[in-house]
Image (cartoon, rainbow, N blue to C red; front, side, top):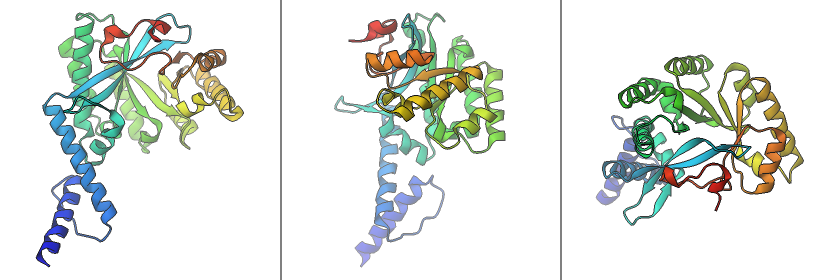
Length: 295
């Protein structure tokens, strides 16, 4: 009886910690949710340890003009190096950070790592292409991330115009007034903004009606099927035409072969990104200009 009680207390404790601490959590019979809470808590603990041990590193994936002449930008992607040397992509641990409320601190940490790496690989010169840095919805809502990023740029003598913050369509906050204020402050600081996974949600056109983005990344699921699905092909043509008229540059992700590349080029898409263009790499020097990065 006592062991059962202690077990229930333990489950409630994990649930309270995973929800942000400083709170009371009652035990309930839904063990699936409790186990999920424990898993998220453990993942966040692993992430915190990896940060302390400097096992979080930025990888960079090239974004090129559809003409293929040169690298236009990098997207910075977080990677966690396990103690055994294996690499874990951001999708495996970022959700845990978001659900336990630590994603904003993680965003700040990544801004430091990314800017340090850019300066080191380009010998301190501001000749590197744009860099796209992912933001969590928590960072957008708190908005302090912009002052932090501006301070980092000032300290390192990096022009904010070299940085484009990126957030997925599903994470755009529902409060349009708050979002407009965020974008206004972002541009006042000199940063750009990109909307990722455009077309994946129900509010896509509403966002374009209410907000302005320097870059719109068209959802990769449409791009991947552009050759075999008439609906996806028509959607990409429509999305490109709309963005073009609104003076927003388009980026097609998931470019997996030459045929897809040629098709998005025919549509008029401005830039492209994907494994066919170049794989993410921790060393910027290994990312060759344009399509010569293809192995």
